[in-house]
Structure formats: C-alpha cells, structure tokens
Image (cartoon, rainbow, N blue to C red):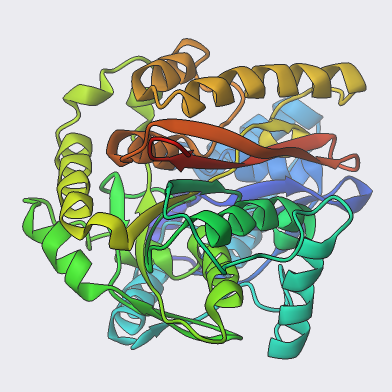
Length: 415
C-alpha cells in the first residue's frame, strides 16, 4: 500500500504540459522547470490523471474509470499513480511546495541566469554554436551575413521569433541582419513571453545571462529607473526567467553580432496577460498593465537612442499538440497564413488597439502566444512605420501541428 499525505486523497495536478508522443503515448512535462522529468503515459492512464483536479477523490476516480472503460481500477493502483506523479513533482502537494521554495531560493541567490537550452535547441560548444548561427544567415533563403559597417540608426524596434533555433533560425537571422544594418542602440529591451502562469503581467530580473558564448550584462540602471516608476514589485515572478527560452535565444544572436568589438546590454522582461483579457475585458483598464507600459515608455524615452525594443514572439499555434482535434492540410496552412498576415498588417500599422481587439474577437483561437509582448511593444515603440521581413511556418506532420512566426522591424520617419 502506497502511503501518501492526507491531501492526496484529492490529488491535484500542477499546470504541466501534455504533448503527443510516439506509439500513441502522451508525454507529461513541467514547463515551469521545477521538475526535469518526462513521463510517458498511455491514453487510459492520461484519463485518470485528467481527473487529478483537487475535486475528485480516489473513489471518485475509480468510479469514473469504471464507467468510462468498464474495468475496475484498484485503490492501490490509483495511489501508485499518485505517488509516481508526486515523486516527479507534478502534483500540487507538500513535497512540491518544499521543492519549489528551495528552487526559488537557489535562483534568487544565483549570480547568473544559466543557459537552459544549450545542447537542446542550439549547440552547446562555442565554436559549433557560432557556426550554427552563421549558417542561418548564409542559408540560401537567409538574409546573408550581417553588415554593421554603417548602421542608419532608424531602427526603433524589432520582432524576432522565439521558436526552437533548429526550426526557426533562418527567420531569426532576418531579424538580426536588419538590426545590424539599421540600429545603433546598445541596450536591448527584450520583451519575451512567460510560458507559465505568473502573478503579475510582467516579470523582471536583474541577473546577467550566461550562454556558451559568454556573459551578457543586464542594464541595471535601466531596470532601477523602470522599477522606480512602478508601485508593483515586478520582480515577484522573477523565477519564471530560470527556464524560459524566449529571451535566452535573443542573447545568442546579439552576442553573434557584437562578439568581436562592441559591448551591449539587455533588459530582460517576460510578459503575460490574465485570461480574462482575451475574453473581452478592457486591457486599458487593467491597472498593472497600464502601470508597467507607462513606466516602460517613460524609461525608454529617458534612454533615447541608446535603447531598442525587441519582441521575442511566435504567432499561431494550431493542431493536436495544442489541444485542437484537427487534420493538418495544405488548405488549413493557407488559412493560417491568411489570418496571420491580416494580423501582421495591423501590427505593422502600429495599432495596438486594433491588434488586441482582433485577438479578443476570435478569443485567441489561434493561440497567438506573442500577444503580451507585441501589445507592450506597440504601446511603447517610438516609430513611424513597420516592415515585414520574413514569415514562416514550422510544420510538424507527426503531431499534425504548425507554429508560425515572423521577422519584423519598426523605423523612425524615413526608414
């Protein structure tokens, strides 16, 4: 008999991700990074786990399983499943709360934000990584090697992807080739996406970022000015920076551009919006969103030409991997592109109200994960016009899913 804490009579799953895997299995993983384990489970077991919502007791789960499958699920088996998930830190339990406190304390005490995707999404060794990044620029469909000889200074803001570099590297290259050619700034305010739940709509960290190419300095003076304009403590969600990749990927390209002769700094900001805003609530009336974007706008104005904003975003997420029971087809991909390009046109017009209204009208059915960062960028950017540099889709036939992304740039008058 598996002995569990009393609260496990009503097990509650944490916000873990369920992804389709081979041989009809489902992979559970922790997007928040408290656990590094991957659990592969069959569909029948996934049904059991789906009932771990804190409201179903062990007998409730047994009864639901018997009704669904016409078979008995013994008490010992349910408790064995609960124990395995608890060991993996996938349940909201006393064990997880203890582990969470230790992880948060360790991260807060760390001098650096260490790389989490080296060797996974990109090469872990410096020489191989530089070659990998260079190959994205010189790809036949790439922009060519970046040219920094005479930057015009007209670039005010940039949109780059945050998808895995192995799938989206060429599109990254289009963004950063334009930055090299048109931008004189050396402080880069990176608006990434928090892919995990947060208490506040924005999360700051003052930690420097480490990558295989070295250490990237964070502009603490900029952050101090920004936080001084705020009443809310936007460092409260700092831990979500530990495993989030959207800013990490941008630092690699900045290091590639300025690796030989110039220093630069970053301002790492992760963005998130509460679900009710996607369903029709007025974003302009959300006090913390307004507080932060106003503070960021004021701080950027003080920084002047030395700062440039980068929104690290992807666009639509369509398919079975994202919980949609659809069949991927050429017609569907064309429809996704049409809808994406319509949204992109609104973004390039620098119309944040129309952009967000469009997301609300469709209730974000395309799962546009870049919404918070795009909205924030459009609110604070000092630009007159925008340009689409590249649009791409990464198609995964195995999971019948597609992710779309773009490279875009915003310029002052005459850009």
